Image (cartoon, rainbow, N blue to C red):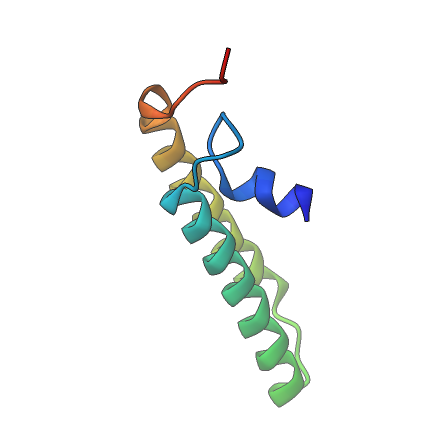
Length: 76
């Protein structure tokens, strides 16, 4: 549970971050969609999966980079 908390909170590990939650939810939804597509068609389209994960990671990474200075810091 600590790993998930660190993934969805900011630098202070207390404040929940909407961008990080969005990253987690969209990544899980993409993986679930890939599994669903595989079970329905019996075909694993790795190129399509890699492209979608790459787009998700780059856009969410850019969003986190843009907002890095607005996150609350570590408590002192």
